[in-house]
Image (tube, rainbow, N blue to C red):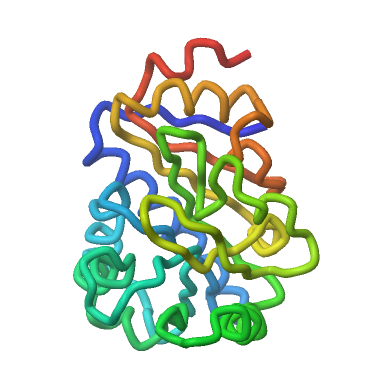
Amino acid sequence: MIRVEVLPDPGSVGEQAADLIAEAVRRVISEGRRFAWAISGGETPVPMFRRLGALALPWHLIDTWQVDERVAPPDDPDRNRSLQAKALPVEALDGIRWMPVEDDDLETAAARYAATLPDRFDVVHLGLGVDGHTASLVPGDPILDVRDRDVAVTGLYEGRRRLTLTYPGLSRAERAIWVVTESQKRDALRALIAGDHSIPAAQVAVLDQVLVTDLASGVRRRR
């Protein structure tokens, strides 16, 4: 079951999500380990990234992977990297493993990226699309059935192919932190909370899942 935290506005959502991540960072480092996490793209997590930058975290002990990335040229504004590199603190950038989407052979690139993944992520940050997708696991894509790879290449979605963590790749996470804002996502949010497998997001198999949102009406059906 997903634990739901409802905040008053998108800024508060970003702050709370960042505080949850910072708490996990401090716990892991206190145990003598490096912190490993994966980040999703889009505008929604920008307040979270900026809040993390204000918390003076030990970024030299934090290893970051991308959940997914569009196949596009370097510095293309469609790239998740373009926004993530601007929103995260400079200190974080040396620890990011960017997905190699510029490679000519995307299947080989996906396998090479998969080989860099940690045995487990302490946290994977996830978003939610209006159509119920998360990462680049979109409705109707054959990648939804991939169970033998942790990273794979999608078909076309909104004009782009992508590299993405698959369900097995996401299941490496100890905790998933969902960050969901924007009123048009209410129906998808209800389906996610209900565990409705008709949407890809609800099929993520991470035992500990926390959803931080400002869409109070999206959680009325929670039981």
